[in-house]
Length: 408
Image (cartoon, rainbow, N blue to C red; front, side, top):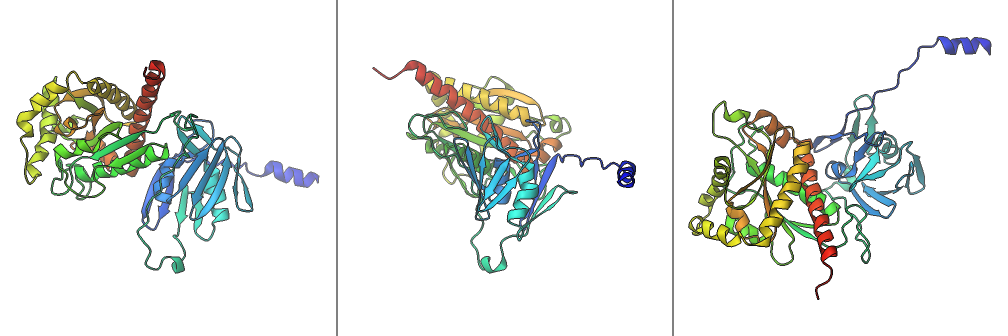
């Protein structure tokens, strides 16, 4: 016994494995890096960032969360360090939780529980912090349909109870407009990899934004779901009676030259008279997309009249507030500058008779911005941040309704 104790004392001490900063999800379609959060003192992953690479869906109802992966349902209780899948109970050490309106799953679920329950498909490499998805069995994959990522969706609240993720009590609809498309590539994406252009980045971010809003129980639609061209004058009209907000997503750029490559960061616009030369430049650049339309209406000459007509419109003030909240959230995650809220005469915003904004998500002419915008992590972070701003605005909107009370 004494000899055994001596051997244990003399044995080298194993230092704990450092926590990974990111987890890699490796699938037959490629690899995705997902950041590890430790905001509650334990490593966890945002379910929203796992939804697309893992084709994962989740439903939250009260303190219960159900996550479906590869046809298997994992049941969690928020605050309890366990997950149940059928007859298998996984001890997770750490508990799942909600932070603001995001569901976080313990790292142990990915590293231990998923490979344990679905070992024929998933395996975990602790040294590389990498989850390998081998795909479904060959017998199941004969001529399958293209996989569609299922967003994490919050179960609708009954009656007037608030949505547990957002605190919202009313149904809301947001129209998302991915800028450009079809034979209009937008700006050429000077520092984007491969053949990516603005239209590709805006569509990728917009799809993720739609998934984020759906996950939070907010109805969201896209003006274009593929590589198609939609007239500038038609885009805003998608936001009609049933629509609450209109969000147009774009990528900025500067004229060629070394000075232009230094400009970086995000800025958010609402429709009004431009106050700066740079705002006029951005509006002119985005409005120039009209030249790709088969029959361009007289929007250019009408633009000044439309803006003046809208000056007294209550939606201008609401658009400015929406822009402030979205700008604050996106600037917090963006590697570039916080370029603030701007105003200018964007044609795409003129036909939206609801609060409407245009987000310039970064500069394709800046190396750091372009790398961020072209990355899966960057696109997810921007989409989640815009969604955060939208939810913050809708919370304010509902508070105003509550204060105003029912119409007499």
